[in-house]
Image 1: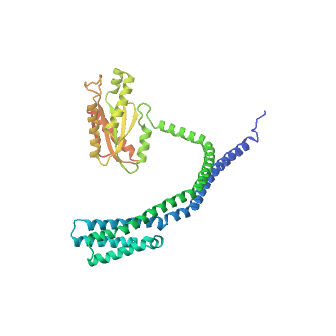
Image 2: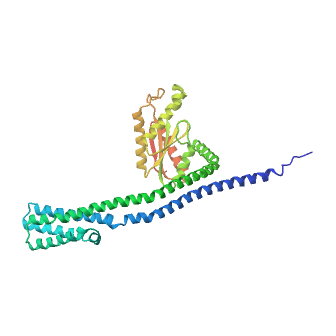
Image 3: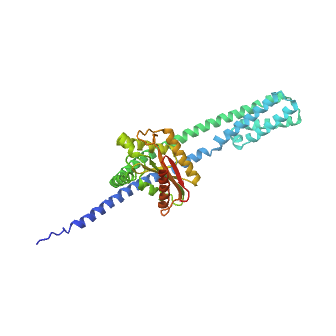
Amino acid sequence: MVTSKPKPTDQPSMQPRALARQHRYVTWLSLSLMSFLALMVLMVYESRWVYPEIQAYFSQTGNLTGQQLSTRARVFLQDAQAELLGDQAEQDALDAALLDIELAYGLADMHIYRREYACAESSLADLDRLGVQLAARNIDRFAAVSMLFAPIQCLTHIEMDQLDRRGAAINDFSESTRQHSQVLTYSSLLIFVMGLVFWWLHERQLRRADRATQETFEWMQRAMRDPLTGIGNRSALHQDVLAKQHQTLGLILVDIDFFKQYNDACGHPQGDTLLRQLATLIGETLEEAKLYRLGGDEFAALLDCPDVATLKRYCHQLMEGLREADFPHPAHPDKKGVTLSVGGSCFVADEATFPYAYEAADKALYQVKTMGRDGWQVTEDA
């Protein structure tokens, strides 16, 4: 008798292929990360390249801060003119104008102004002389206003010149950084595209695994759902209870009264429609609850419930919602619409306590049925 043996090359051939796939995975991922790292290095390098010019622009006191100080000094002098020409008493007007002139003098008394603008020295001297005269009260208001025109004109000249300098600095800065920006743009684009290509090659290696994982997840999701109503099933109920360990929960079991008679009278398609309608009704009435269909015409609701009184309120709320919906039941023995039997229990979530809570809610449901159905009851000692 001849027995076939596996080819000695079969098993070893699998290992090199797996190692090759792993090697490609590591290679593409590494290349992609290295590309993006190179992009970051380039951006940092370009930023440090341009930074000195940025700093030079924004640190130019003569172009920015100086212009702002001259503007504020001019405004103070114009305010002083307004005080002198205003309707205040002369004493008050002179005091207010003197304060504005002193503030303007402090802002305009800058070394850069004295060094670069010929009118600065004479304007400051005029302001100093005017301040002395106002303090001594030996100058009339209109003469003081006239003396302020020359300093205001000088400050306006300084202000406009500083604005021109700032514009020139902006132009120089833009021109000097244009080439750097182009290098950064094109180099970044090239490196970024290379990184994307490497990343796509890396993702292609993972695509099949991701697809298989997604299919598994979707299958698990379907396995936890009731196909008719779209709500959870018994397995989902058990899983959700375990996910809420040590929390106080309320369990409500719902059973449709005389559902068999409804199916016999209206047909199973209409019965399925009623099940979906009731699932929607329970969800809308108990907004905070998670719903489950346990099989046939039995539903369950799980919700946060701090005490039995709250659970009773939920049960009463559910019955009121059903009465408002008024679903017809042509075969109800008591000539009513669709009615429910509801049982509930309150418990602290745990794998050991859940079976007792379920049994307590089921007993409460059974007691409702024995008392004629169309009602609810909560077991308080679950």
